[in-house]
Structure formats: C-alpha cells, structure tokens
Length: 241
Image (cartoon, rainbow, N blue to C red):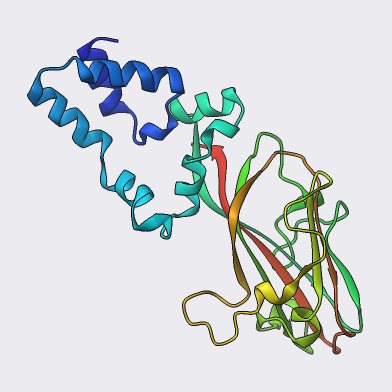
C-alpha cells in the first residue's frame, strides 16, 4: 500500500475498526513510511475522539457499538467485509418480549412460538432473522400490572416474586448467563444511574442469526393477578446500510 492508497483509505472509512487485520497491517506500514507532516495527519485520523472514548475511562463508557467494534474479529469474514465496504452497518438495537405472568410460578418468556406484535414482541420465533448478528451488552427484566391489558401496564423493577426468582437464559442451547442466575441482578431499586431492571453484561456475547433464544423464569411465589413481565435484549446489531 502506497501513501496515496493509505490516504484514500483513511478518508473513506468512518471507523478503522472495520478493517481486516491484513489491511490494518498494510495501513500502519504505509503510515510509517510517510513524511513527518503526512504521518502526523494520518495519526490524527487513527487517534480520533471515538477511538479515545473506546479506550479511555477504563472502558466504563463503552456504547454497544463500541463493544461490538472491539469484537469484530468474532464475526464471519463476509460480515466484516460488508461493514468495511459500507454495505452493512452497526446500529443500536433493543429486542423485547412481554407476557402475562398472572398467577404463574414459572414463565417461558422467549420461545420459538413467539410472534411479532407491537407492544408484545419484536422478536419472531425467538431468534434473529437471517444474516442478522447482535452483540448482547445488557438485559432488562421488568414487570408491571394493569387491569386493562399488557400495553397499559407501567413497567419497572420486578415485583417481589420476580426479583426473588431465577432466570435461565440460553442461546443455541448454551448458557449466556450461569444456570439459575438469581433475578436479584435486575433489582435496581434506589439506583439512579441505570434504567429499572437493567443489568449490563461484564462479558458481552454475539448472538448469531437464526439461533434459538430462550429466557425461562422461575418465580419465588405466584405472581399477582394482572401482572405482566417483560424482557429487553440490548446491544448492537448488523443491518444493511
């Protein structure tokens, strides 16, 4: 890669994290051979504010997209190439499902029988659609009550039977949370810096397209009448530009 090619690449790619390891090595070699002024300009592009945010503050302010950028190497080569060529992009994503938990002691919250319906779920068949990959960075578990239906409930930190229960969360048969994880991790009572029921994963995980997602809840006691339970899967996913 010569100087002109390196400059063209620097100008055309919004985020250099999309580059393959091979192109990154070629780019760094070309920058190293540049005259001092050109090298300085190229390095300013490399060390952009976005890059500084990703590596600064101990990583505590990473957005889902930032987390995904750090794990691009785990995606298939054709998906990485699509991101590099701007045919694909990373976007913030929330998948959700809500169901009635009234009088139940257990609830299969995400299953392969789920259908998309506004206010109830945007996750068809409990899986991502073809060619969709999502980095899961956080999960929200909430509940609410309403005598008039699931869409009228005000959702917040789960009621006692929910937060004292357990969750089994699996993708493609593999646990993304330890088996029988206590729902206390979703108890954000008196926390003012996070949304109700929000739990950030210490180790975000990619969810591949068309892999079965399961969220099975066990409650410590039967839930009250008119109680609805909701889960949100939060992260960044790959979509067409």
